[in-house]
Image (cartoon, rainbow, N blue to C red; front, side, top):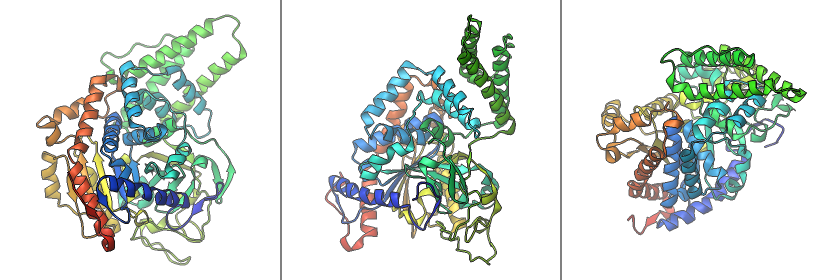
Length: 545
């Protein structure tokens, strides 16, 4: 795509298409090593659900074991929501070296280190941007604390192994929070937003910009102001920004900001309420430690202008964060479709039709369609988008791999939810039914039965569309009768400080076991889809053992 233009084309973006074609050669070699012979490579997608730090660690375990078993090399797409995106992005920043990645994870949670000063510096720097939002604060001050990482690399840095086909093509999910009403009303496909090493945009609209220009300012389809590419720390915060009780978090942020401001002005911070917010004590301590350091610097004689400027920047950060908290503003970025006029509209979903310039929209999705111009003013009149965690829609990225343009034949869905591991299947079934997208249908009564005592693997098949293998993290095969205890230990909102090395290692082992124990089933379905979609030279298997 043109690096300084908005791209609206039918089918895959050319960079993705070329990368996927190159990947096919590696997949064929991997299938041969697995003793599955096929003349054409089936397209396999691995999905990781959300689930905070639990999903991050468990997804790393899944990827590590798939690599060990020779399965990861047979995968074309890796897609994630929320915590799984942290793991998937780490795979690429470590050049696919799972041993080094796992060793680094254990090291981080052994030493329990976090670079507070650097995190705060990055947050204050971000606050100088016109599009600063709570996502910046969340990314640099919360997610970096949870993961013990502050990656400064970019999605575009992942291009080399992807374009060479040595690693699967990654897709990172988000949703447009301004379109939540459309999602609640009609499960509108255009709610979904995706990031790859090449592009960012709305797959249902076929509208994308180069990933290096995500966040830059566009008008009428042309780049008018360039901003630096956002780093992975910020993107991880955006992808993993789902919250629990928003009102509690809002009050908490206000309280912390007030304490920061009073402390920076030399006032003694008010005492904590007894028993108040113990789960947030790490952030309280962090803010107080930073404030204490700031006050010590203020008391030093001959304070130079740079130090005064730092204090001014700090106060601006506090003020802007307070304003964002009052408006509850997350994921603010320039809308690259602002005042954009398009000559055609590519629609990725099967039930959306091309509209002629005189045709009235007949559905919520078509209303957001584009032909000769963007019909829905929501898409073209907004100066900004507000992108948030896709788990607020569906906690796994099925909508991003189901469009027929990606031709996915087999989906391995790893569910790291703490609650009902079939909620993602229910939500996706509803989404696909509304938009006539082929997806295996499962009776509600059967899902209810499975959720009471989930097994480690379920194989879902429909008359058409991809085969879906669904793997609940906490299951009776691996956890026995202790599923609830496992869920409590790895609660979504538990802080990183509660994750000792032993706790991390146990979760890694559990996730690995779920892959290892189901390897034969995965191989069998790989062989089946290779034969089903390429019957002329049907796939053959020498042995599944």
